[in-house]
Length: 63
Image (cartoon, rainbow, N blue to C red; front, side, top):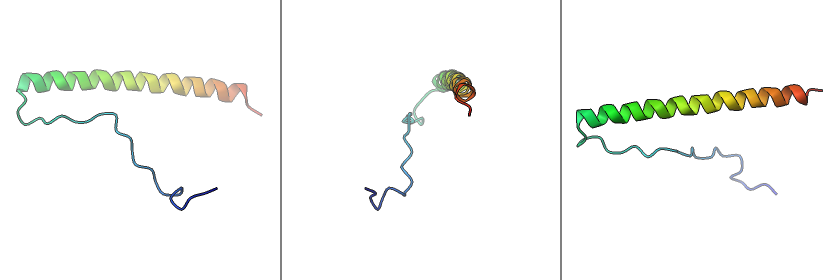
């Protein structure tokens, strides 16, 4: 059974809670940016892996 709110957009799930940056040193901010870049690279690699897996499954189950 459908509810009235089933067609409403769902709120985005945030994986990161940004920390306050006001009192962080420049060196710590640079380290934080480096960590974020590494995490972005890791997420992009996972996206590529999943896209390849999806493509292989689509090929296998093509009608």
